Image (cartoon, rainbow, N blue to C red; front, side):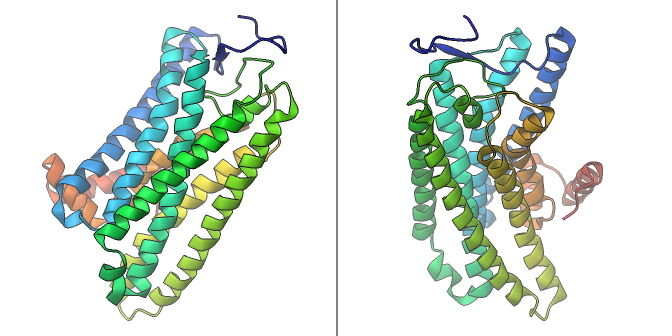
Length: 328
């Protein structure tokens, strides 16, 4: 199939980014992405299983955390496996329908992530600022409705972006990224119909900015209450509960917005690739570590699940943090 396609013709498949023509480097990419994917899958499945099988963790905060892990698992499973298979098989191809599915599912999980992180901020706000009303406000029915709303919002946003992106014919089938990323697809458009997707991105950006403002305001109130707590231990627990959430949301949103709001380029640099990895792979991989390493309840549940003693889990946690030079 030719790289350049006549304006009137249709694209039946796309060619994803080729990391290298050297076979050894292709195998290196395969090994690296496979290791990152397996680490992400293992970490998130561990969080999901620990919360599901430990009745002590059947609370709103861990219910939302389990849903976040499910969404992270879905997001990486939509993009990374295809890139891994292509490197192993020495090919770049992805079908048109496969590309549509990637855009739809990836945006569904990413949009749900943003909405759920906002809900988690509200949960922390109620728990810390209005503890006496927490059980009444964040009851089981309300939590299920919130998560259902998150999934519905994700589906609507994904359908909007997918429809707007693929409404235009493409003049080329070369996608300069390791998956069907919307900014790269827009550079292939034959006409200005792609402005529909630009409008959709503006709508989504406005929504994300609104979520960001809501989270910032929530944490201003939270930290105002926390600093007044008489117990040092209570302040530490509150900070360790809230700070990981801020780190995850900030990393995810700033890198994602940078990737989607800058003018699309027809060529991909190492910086473009790094930015894409930062918002597609890094948050799902590090979320289990960020949310569990300083959380005794999660560590206890994981220890029971793996049959480890709590002291062994503490040593394991410290080793990971030291290795990654990651401190909360």
